[in-house]
Length: 347
Image (cartoon, rainbow, N blue to C red; front, top):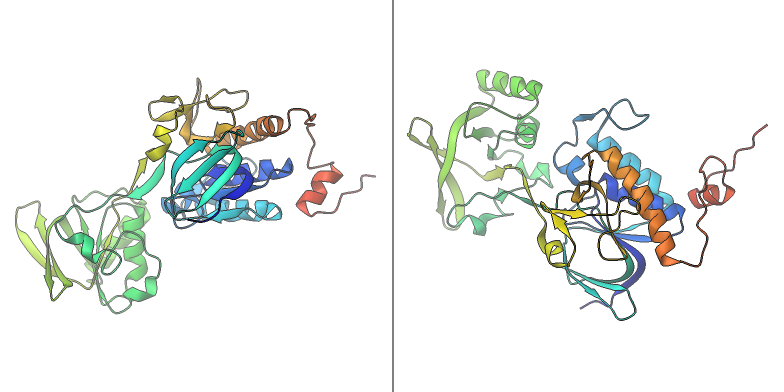
């Protein structure tokens, strides 16, 4: 077991609101560590819509989810946050000195004074295919995420799903894989219309295949997955030979251990005081889609506003004897120094 990392703040969730929370805390000289259950920074923006346009970020007419995350990472770089990815917070214990001891699924421990829960709608886990024996092939021939597209070059690939991830990877791998078969339970897709149109055109050109139905069984030889059996809507069973199976059934949010921390919960969301965005436990704040209050709107820009107020509340909580002054990044030499920029001179 590792020795605890001692810090003023731990942020749970590395989506856009969690990243902006780093910025707002940094302006107030509060250093933060960030924990996320996903293997990379970005939350839903990266997992669900990295290349889809977002139109309601103030002063940015349009950007993709990936561009938003990259810009936020650039913005918080002066504050050097430390990220701890691919792990969930498994327990929280209040200590006698008022600090919190957090433990994660990778046996890391954090001893912190404040916690900011920016976990969206919970820790994301891929929705899995429930078939006997499939577990032994996961991350060998069965994949719920693609980390290295090159490993599929020259291979026979079966992709399941009807959303953006499934079609994006199918289109990306056409011409690289030796064969691409897309399987979806119905001939109706949630993916972007242009992606669906391109997929259908490739099927007509015999560059990939579309099967309407569901995988109902697996076949293997000598410990290697060799075929999937697909039951069509007509009831017929078809065999499809493959080297790799990519499953994109979406992500399932789970509140997880957060539900056991004694925080007030309403419809799987955390209730907060809208003056501070503090939960019913002093020192624990909830920002973004994880919280609920009268008039709540699940928008990224709402989460940014919440992160700013939560940061000021935390600064007062950490140093109650200190007067916390509102400073502007436009004019404050102190903030310019923190951000590593030259103070502008006004004529």
